[in-house]
Length: 80
Figure 1 (tube, rainbow, N blue to C red):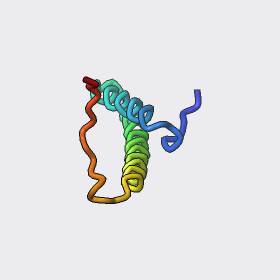
Figure 2: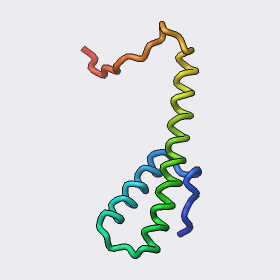
Figure 3: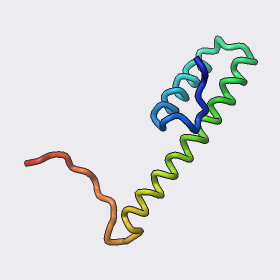
């Protein structure tokens, strides 16, 4: 299976893969070469995830109109 580029993964998939990499590295069973390769992949995943998060924050800011009147509030799902 071909590995997708980090920028082509969804935010959730990138975080899931990053979590897997961290778990594998914490176990200590990887060779130095494998660890470096996984570390490099993890850095790429973290960077792509950070960029996607910043883009989402910008969209929310634009949608909210950057207005003080449009302050974010906690979502309450209780319909009473």
